Amino acid sequence: MSRPAAPLTRAQLQAALVERADMPSGWTVQEQPDLLTDSSASPGDSAQRNTKPAACGGIAELLKPAGSSIPAKAAVGIVASAAPPGGNRVASILGITVTSFAPGDAERLLSRAMALVPGCARFEAHDERRTFRAEVAEVDAPKLGDQAVAITQTTRYGEQEFVHSVVVVRSGTTLIQATYVNLNDATPVMPDTALLTKQVERIRTAR
Image 1 (cartoon, rainbow, N blue to C red):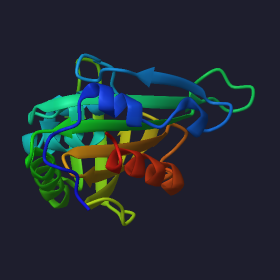
Image 2: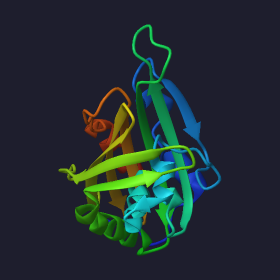
Image 3: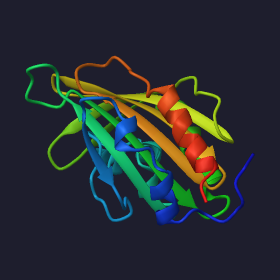
Image 4: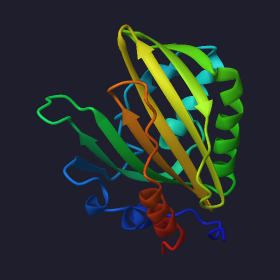
């Protein structure tokens, strides 16, 4: 069942967001109370403003819906990071964002971004310091919400590589996005379906 057309407010999104206790035990957790004013980015996605082919920059809308050229009404999130035992660098990142849009815009964003995937199986991206090589593939998405899509994006520069595993679920006018970033290698690790299911249900019943 879809929600009524009116987009959820930031306060409603925040109240419906999964909590610190829902995130992996022992990980460092940070809440993101207003993603429309938060300039933080996941590794590599800032470079996607400059891509070859240029259209492949639109893939970034799946990594960060709140940064889409389709304006969001409100967006909040929560992110957890983990280091390996005895390690001093982040090895894994798990993020959940919930973003509300005007009626019809969430569907338009998903359709537009996913239409790019077949032509962007491989592309290059660069920022002011580095050139990245990216590979994108559509993968099976869990059957949640009104619409769900999933991709993996493997990014390489020099000897380093990492992979984003992304699931985006639409519930009415809200996009629920979950990303697991494996910074160790190019092995995809999909976000936990139970956690994503809980978040989708909380958005569905948000008041």
